[in-house]
Amino acid sequence: MSNLYSSTYELLNKYRKYILILIDTFIILISFLSPHIISGVHPDKIIWFENTWYIYTTIYIVTFVLMGVYKNIWRYAGIQDIFKCLQANILANIIFLVLTKSLNIFVRYYVYIVAFFVTSFCTLAIRIVYRAILIIGDKNTKKLSHYTNIMIVGAGEATVAILQEISRNNPNNYMVKCIVDDDKTKIGRTINSVPIVSSTDEIPAMINKFDIDEIILSIPSIDKENKKRILDICAKSKCKMKILPEVYSLLTDNKNILDKIREVQVEDLLGREPISLDCTLTKEYIQGKTVLVTGGGGSIGSELCRQISSYGPKKLIVLDIYENNAYIIQQELVRQYGDTLDIEVEITSIRDKNKLNQVFASYDIDIVFHAAAHKHVPLMEKNPEEAIKNNVIGTYNVVQAADEHNIEKFILISTDKAVNPTNVMGATKRIAEMIIQSYNSHSETDFVAVRFGNVLGSNGSVIPLFKEQIKEGGPVTVTHEEITRYFMTIPEAVQLVLRASSMAEGGEIFVLDMGEPVKIKDLAYNLIKLSGLEPEIDIDIEYTGLRPGEKLFEELLISHDKNQVKTNIDKIFIEQPTSFDEQELFELVKELEQAAYNTDIEKIVYFLEKLVPTYKRTTNEKCSKSTECA
Image 1 (cartoon, helix red, strand yellow):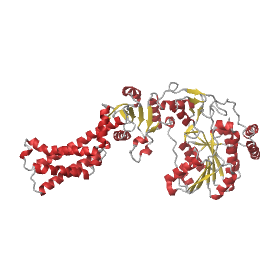
Image 2 (cartoon, rainbow, N blue to C red):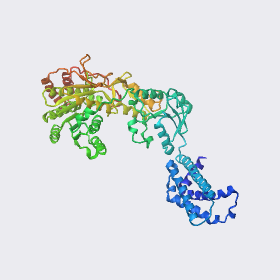
Image 3 (cartoon, helix red, strand yellow):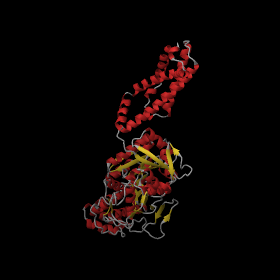
Image 4 (cartoon, rainbow, N blue to C red):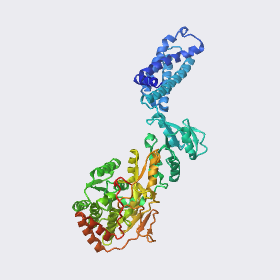
């Protein structure tokens, strides 16, 4: 049967236009005969029949050709194509009526009426049948014999759009078996012949009943709490899960809605509403200013560039040592904003003091966001001298340049690992905080730091690593069963950074509320389940041990008393500054720089401990896959 469909499909596809013309010709003749057959009068006894049938047929075929009926791709036919075919029928019949009357050819009126209805019905019907044969043949030709059984969650307009798109174009070979929705008035009804079978609480039972392979969450406006509840229910099955993005990304139109369906991401399971702030003050702060972003091609830096660009800066300067990343964000912003955004790219290292001074002298910079840094904890444990050169000396160079050129505001992107650091990376970021706090006390520039935890999807994040390991069949490597981290999405973190910087007066260390810490083990389990697999059965979890410098739990505040200050923004706090000897700080920084360039590890550790009294280097054994563990 499959071969028969495939052969029919190939034949119809190759000669489709000519086959349709022949079929239409036959239909038109039968339609013209139908009034006489109905009346019981043989055509031979009708003197005008032999003089008019060819006129009627010619008028119809020519009208169909001129109106483009044969140009339609009936495999994807919609209501407009059907309406065009009906219009062609009406026009052809009117032309035939006018022509016969003008030539004084006698035709009874009931012939016009019956012939029109029969022709219209048959030409439309044959195209619907033709379309069905093409679709079946298309599926067999592409060997799409195995359907993906789909359950859709949500019985709203988005689901209607999905079903309509699947009926027109179905490259993934979806077979929508059922819909679930919590609106009880919809249960028992259908959308495009697909039944609405139950509420979301009964999803597991419906998965078994309809043998579901994949679930699509089709409620773009759903709140985070309900999204997490539904995804948690779905995660208990072995079904793959996809989701429509938030409602704002669907506002333009519902065309190609299947392309907008994405994989479920870990942030969908965080169970909290995304952070959304009033951007008015941020826009007033950025608009018309010249802004420099160091590390502008990185995950945080590039998002800073995106959001800054949306606020109408006078000029945006992207500074990065890695030209590929800088080029990518430059081209993205050029495509989006065109000539309305003045953007410059500077390729240099923040270690190069002379080039930095040249950059600062070339532009009248108002604001600096300093995101350039080495951030990978295990790699910096193995290469502490590089962390010193980049995170300490590089920051010092940018701070000095900002001070010398009277920059309005300098914002350091810091990390929760700077709090009671147990690793070189965290210690270097704490020293960077101390440098900007020291400069703030005697500079015209307002120096501030913004401290936050891990961001989902950033370069070096554990999430892309887990996804790659799952794709390869495992194992997924987790350093410790109890290890936890704070998580926030990159856009959320950058939004808070910009808002904090707009309210900064100088000297503050802003701390972002990252919500509740998340177990890395739970992240791994959720990602495996979201892939339609079972943890510890389909994909193994391998615990590799804490890496050098790694904590089980991260902290966001140095002080553990009531000294942190609330701001008027719920998610932003200010860490009270700790006292230190500024003269000793810069003397030790010089010593640290010499030790780094001499690659003297013992001295580096010694000076780090002197500079950061809370720095306690851990003795975790290095895991066998130090750059591949979470």
